[in-house]
Image 1 (cartoon, rainbow, N blue to C red):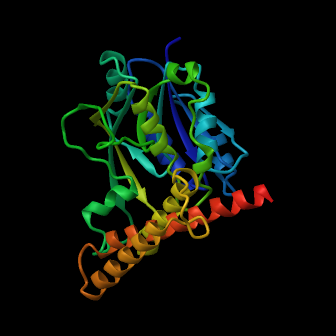
Image 2: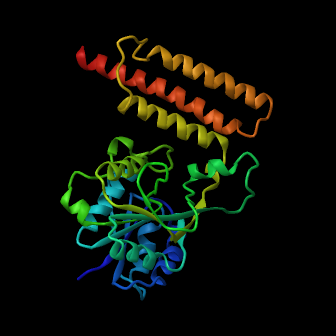
Image 3: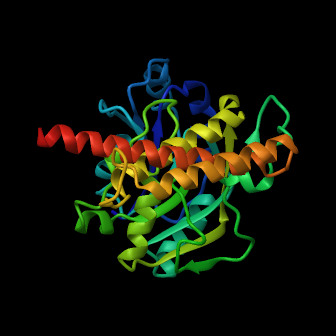
Length: 314
């Protein structure tokens, strides 16, 4: 039987599950759909609430526990659990769906001959006002996605779509058992970082699959208060830099403890510019600080890789 599975990875957000699942059960779709929750070792009442919700009317709710901690492991488990479905829709446990979401995803994949489609992600700030420094250009780092009101095909990485609101044809994963989220970029619990969905998006582009953006697929993303601090954005980019330095930066013959000299110059220039912008209260100071954090992370990643290689050869 052709069906669609909604897959959501969840960690310690039991207070959001009832409303989320209720709204998902209100969705309409031309084909049957079920709901899968991948519990990633939650320590709150997630299991008890899921057990209760699984007995209520509406779309069938199933849940599994992925014991390997981290979002990459949880998302890979979701893929395996959905391989018997024709379509897989993915969103996060801190989001709520808008009406018509599933229909839009289904028709995009079924009638437009697409392999993958993503939609809008609207950032919602609860219980606090938006900080003045949180300018519109920074909302993308909280997963906001809005490329306008017209659907279009995605041909390059200038308009990425994320696992906050995305649908796949699962036959791609069935035919490619190694096409999974990269566990090197795993993010555990409330740690910052990640990047596994960026790599997955780029891999689909590289393989030439048909991707598109559909604004009629829309979710609201409720941002936790701990992410509304400048330090979060700096940690996010510092961690991203470390992983890039570890796994993507090429080796250079000329280096200091594995760090190529140009990275020292780059980091110094970014730090100097950041300090200058903070002194003058420049509106883009946080964005520049993120560049500096990434540059420092690159250096640390290169050093860690150098240290590991040195230990391996000893």
